[in-house]
Amino acid sequence: MSDSLFAFDRGQGVRYVCGADEAGRACMAGPLVAAAVRFDYERLDADADADARLADLNDSKKLSSRRRAALLPVVFEVADMVVSVVIPAGQIDRDGLHVSNMRALGRALEAVAVDGSANLVDGSADLVDGFELNGVGVSPRPMVRGDQTSAAIAAASIVAKETRDWLMRRLDVEYPGYGFAVHKGYITPAHVAAVVELGPSPAHRRSVRCKALAGLGRSGDCPALPASVPAPRAPRAPSPFAVALAGDAASLAAFLLARPTYSDLTWRSRAGRSRRRAGETRSDFVRRVLS
Image 1: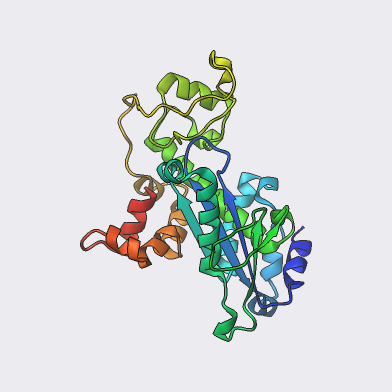
Image 2 (image 1 turned 180 degrees about the horizontal axis):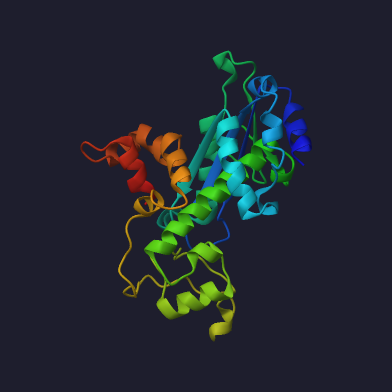
C-alpha cells in the first residue's frame, strides 16, 4: 500500500508534501486531535531505507494498534516535520465541533507548510483529508479518502490517532470507571451505560448529541450532557504526564514535548504569551495545556 501512497506524493512534482488528518471527531468524550506531517522528498530519495521502513504505512483505521504504535516513531524519524494540535473537550463545547475541527486542521497544516517565497523549490503541496479549509494561511487541496491516497495524510492519520489514544489512556487513569482506555471516548453501549451510572466526567463534551441514549426512555436525539458532574467514585489519579513517564507511553510523551504541538503554537502567539505563568518553561506549559 505504501508504494502507491508515496507514488502519489512524488507525483505532486514538488520537494515538500504536507498532509493533515484528525482523530476523535465522532466522540462524546476526550479531545479532538489533528496532526500534520511534512515529507521532504529530496531527503527521502537520498535515504535508500526510508520507504522500506514505512512499507506498512496506510490509513490508521486499516492498521492494528500494534502496527500503528510501531509506525509512529518511524514517522517521526523519517518525516521532515510533525505537528499535533490538541483541542480539549471544553474548547469544543465553546467553539463547536466543526469550527474546532477546521481550526485544528488549519493550524496543523499552516505549521508544516513551506512558503514558495522561502527559496525552497516552489513551496509545498498541502493536502488535507476530506475537508475544504477556508480562512487559513495556506490553500490546501481536499482529498476524498486522502489517508488511503497520500503518504503524508496517512502518516498524519497515524500521528493523530496514536496521540489521541495515548491521551485517552491517560484520561482513563484520571477518571476511572468510564472505560476511556477501551472505547477511546467513542459512543458504545458500555460507554453510554457508564455515563448513565456515573454522570459525565470533566472529559465529556457537553455539547454532544447522539441517538445512542434514545433507548433510555428518551425519544429522538438525546439532549446535551448535563453540566453537573457527580463526585468521582475513586480518588483522582496523578496528572496524565506523570503517569505516562512511568508507563508505556513515555516515548510518545517525549515526542510531544520535543516537537511542535498546538501548545507550542500557542506559546509563540500573542494569546499564548498572555497565558504563560511567571517563570514557566515551554515543557511545563505543554504539560499544563495537555493535562
